[in-house]
Image 1 (cartoon, helix red, strand yellow):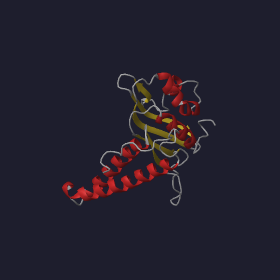
Image 2 (cartoon, rainbow, N blue to C red):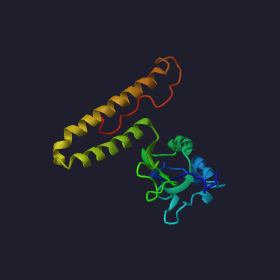
Image 3 (cartoon, rainbow, N blue to C red):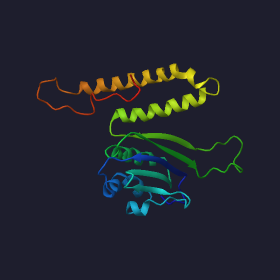
Image 4 (cartoon, rainbow, N blue to C red):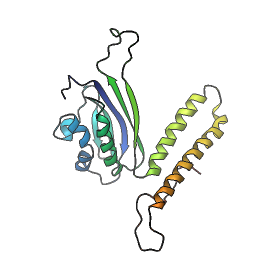
Length: 208
């Protein structure tokens, strides 16, 4: 698809802490769905954003941090690239992280469009992390932040402890359900078989 025919400008934004030992070659392979979509032959070539003022895709080896502020022209099929990227980044992430993706309707002109016509702008959040618990932790933290920011318009922060506790209960239930589903796929204890998945393990922080 030519960038001039692409119906969307797609912006990817997020910071992913990486585990010790992750090198550029591993990151290039994990991010291959992004830079190949942009028509590049390597991460170095594809890391540049469509907009010069954006830093693009950066790897800070000293800080062990992947930073993305990157725009590419494309269509809704880009979601498949995101799914593949997130699966790969799960293996490299040290902790849970959120990645924001915004689809801007490149064909919509607010000034010239009829009043009843709306843009096809879209937004989604994707999450990566080394374990389901790490992913749930960042989901929980973002939700608490959003809810508290909204409710502090009407209540003092000290009054919202009960609300935060209820959110923690919901995530604890989800985590326990996930662990139970993973345990069902394991052989009985003592059978000599090896377990699979991320069964058991530690609950996300605050979810007690």
